[in-house]
Image: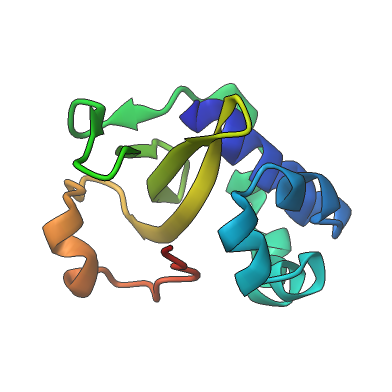
Length: 133
């Protein structure tokens, strides 16, 4: 699931078109943003060479996958991209007969950094987007 979401994210950034990525969001997330706003937010990633190679990497999950008390499934981990690793926290909700993205939290960190959600505030790069229902 993380590979598919992040691959879709990478393709949207490279093509500068978030319409397909937007279609995979929950309806509530769609109300909070637009494909154009996603492009404005994530467009700066286009210059990242490591993003172009993201599909060659397997996501490393930092925590077991879990579903919380409101039925949201959370994944957190990273891709061992270089020169910085791409860390993510993805949250999904089962809606319309499939898991759809509720929130996405991405940042880049130096190699060797051990990603944990509690380290978000310590990250050297700014959190790019975090929308939560």
